Length: 214
Image 1 (cartoon, rainbow, N blue to C red):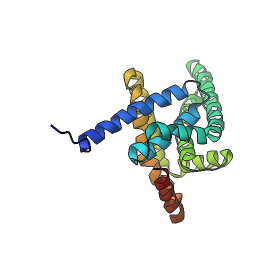
Image 2: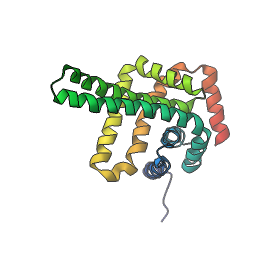
Image 3: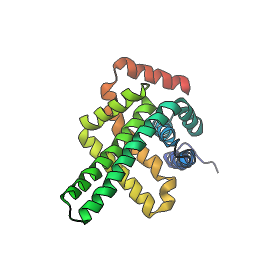
Image 4: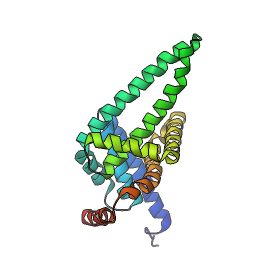
């Protein structure tokens, strides 16, 4: 009896296994916290190239992206983390004011929205780093521009991120599948946006680079 391992079922099964392994890599490389930016960048890069694009090897692609983007991703992560912490701190303070009946407590809802958009911004930041080379400042600015310019897509990105967090919280075992799945959904959305700003020459060069890396 011979098995055809190139049929759709086995290809899909292979993708699932790759996603699980990729989630493990992301979790392990994110544990120091400081490296979460580089790990998230590598996650998106590998999903885009290997899981969705079917090019290269998962482990090799992940660590290549982790190494190549470590500095800009880490510096960007520190900025993102500061924004998150400030927003969370403001949420804690304004919640106390809201519970005391202070009119300033209404800012609680503003900072909740701000935190959500900061989370969406971070998704753009690390995806952008995975796909383009730029300075940290320009990366942060461009990611913010894209987030605000494509607001309907941004709202969907935020909803997907929230859904992923909730699912992983309610069913902890899915933490070994959710990160890669969320990154795949981001790739489907963000690539539509990124390609609007890429010249035909950039697209052709990217295709050529992908062939060289195979």
